[in-house]
Image (cartoon, rainbow, N blue to C red):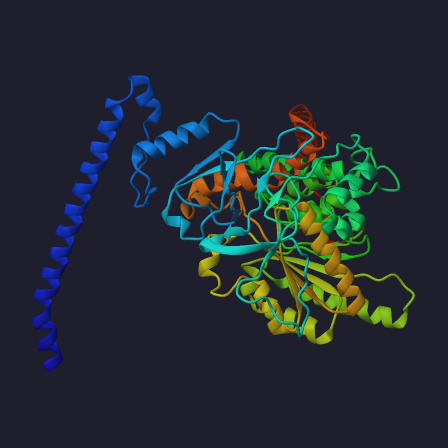
Length: 559
């Protein structure tokens, strides 16, 4: 009774506080509006009508706080940058997984400040590679801005943390070899790059490898062993060329064109379901090119590029999505649930995380076979999963079994910022997924998932370690899902379209790869446009052929 009286007595006082605070906020808003009006009037008074239109800056008031710069100065600075050759990203908040690109104005580098960038408007100036024999001096970005505004340190050293070793203090660094500009990074101690460029002959991988070795000796081990920089013993059937690097570029474009066309086909009602891979192509190409032909792949549902690299054709992809009589699964699976026994790619299953424990079982089998036949070929299993699947019981069980049984396998986590509509800050409170590796007694490394060379190097090193020590290795690839989760999802309901556009314009893995190729004169805009047209036509032809075929006969149900 006494408590009720006390609460009743304090209620009017609380109302008074609320009224006072509301009045204060109202007064502050009035003053702010008056200040903006005054600044806008001052700007328009000192410029012509045409200049005023150019400097006009409007945006819906959705609760975000804009730059603290005076309005005329901020508008003038934005217009100056706009007319330069560089790409511009205008966003009212910094997207989740993007690399921080430092501003380079008037030839001087400005170190980005680590602060809450979700509350400040950012205009990012991206330095486009200049096709000259001398690279322009560029600032070395030292942090990677990711989901939940987390600032992840970047490192140029490929260091897999082994069980028993001290885990990185604070936040695990992100291993990166190539920046968004398409330039390879210097050592962590270097602050700038100003290396003379050697232009190798086009299509000569040995000359390109030599040029990279001379310019970036700290990556020498990775360049020498990188299969992307080595010719295949025979021509690839899909490109009719033995150039592995250019095949990687074409396949990344092919995957994106296939995604776009089949996604539209679902919207037209021609197939029932689809999931795109926009923004994650470097993970597929980089990891698949580092695996052995006998390694077994246990995919989730966003790794079609891995299967494509192994030889799955556009016709086979389309046959599966249309569930026709040529579908290897006889129409028993949903679209994008691919599988191919010949290519050692286990069939995708819908339940989340089930493939993780299956991969452990396969790796245990490989371990037992190696004991029986030590001279036989060594194989590993690799399992792909998203940050959301890492919250399942299957993930915990698989990690525990793999570490205690010491099986040769790779746990590959695609941390793309969202588990369908759940952002990572609502998914876990710790430092991503890789920080769990030491707890299981497992080796681990975090890598930039938009850097095809870094992904390749990390997977190659992890595979080597898994075979030599007969133990699992965990890799966390930081990336960004540019598309919707699936055709059943509308990501605009839970994330800002500006952050998606930022990822597409600045951190896109295909754009980064193309900038690298342009540096050395291996491609240009015309070449890229030609490849895109060729792959688009190839996908359309494969889709039309698959759509025209009959469905599997009833007798196949019992095969």
